[in-house]
Length: 120
Image (cartoon, rainbow, N blue to C red):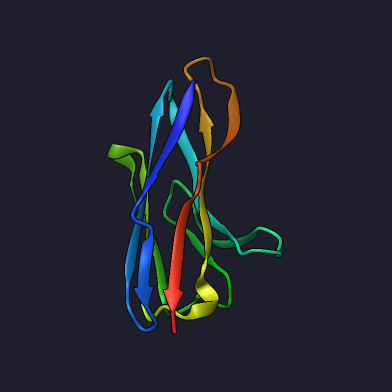
């Protein structure tokens, strides 16, 4: 069993910063791709940023230059540094990870979500 434990959401004024963290815990052989997605009220879940185990990254156009994804492979943890936040960044942010278990099966996992609210 694997859990993704998220932290770091909150309320911030426009122009401010937040840092999200997501730690993968449990029966883990290898953590492959990790990433962040978000879902605003009335909208579909969308990709924010992803990172491969080798460090290659991908960002949504709307966050390029403002958000940075990074990971600590030794801790099975992924981070999302969010700077210059805008009200339109307000959403529930979900951590995602593709994890290979000790039995060599790969599964897509999701965190419980952490709320980010940006006030104008």
